[in-house]
Image (cartoon, rainbow, N blue to C red; front, side):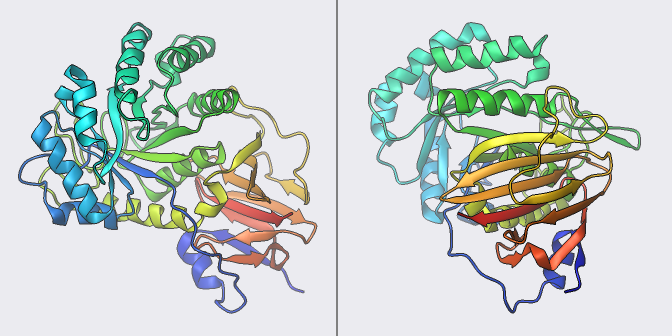
Length: 400
């Protein structure tokens, strides 16, 4: 049988793969996908804009609604279009039991927002606040988001921060942000802490038996460039390969502050779609098509290849089961092994944000390739040459 090289760019692979013979999986549950700085209160808080958010593939909305009436309106609109709302208002901190009692049965409620990027000194009070809400509503989680690793002097200091949060605030999940793609002039680079941050959060989540939530940056500001599909794909699939169970975009709507020069958010300040809207929509559709791989998955190992591997990561020394050859020719790749509902997965990701990866991969004939639309094809039909565009992944499946 003649083997075909595989170029993993979404349009090419779907065009090149014949519909006949594909094995379509049953529709899986959706991976939670959260829009930060969602639709602002006021004239833009309309059913049409909330439906537009849902149409882009989001499952959760987080609008910065400081007033109670605006927060209730966000709940109502989310419920009407089938979204869940991360609830936020000033009154929630002043009267947590009373507010939770009022909204706990609302069909649009997804979670209660506490704080973004708190420092260590804030943890005891945040824990007390969460306990007060939980005394009324144990069904909906409280939620806050942690700082990235590079905000601390060392990896150990960051690990202590995460552990302090979990012991004092003790929420059902860990969430953190890290925006790794930077640009200076024409040069685009990846923050050196990105992978070690994933290592720390993923390890701590496994240690305490909780899921973690992670981000992709969707809005240019400061040194962060306008995201491309490659930028988004690298961040989102890296999050998933390390075990993330909720994906978050910062931001959906342009926040409009002058400090950071936010621009080219998926939705502009005037409520118009930028080109990034379609990129986010495309990524969300692609990820949900593969949700059965990642949602509920258990990470058994994550390793890296390349002449030099990223700080804080582990070099691949032994090939995963059913992989006979994996040669990335000194280029960087992530190799994640997952198990999920009786199946084994190997996720191979190009860790470059700018360059394609050529890899020679041979399997023992027992694996299926999980295509971007969620269908499966025998991996033996492809290779041994695989070309991964920046940030892209090859996903291999073995049924036990």
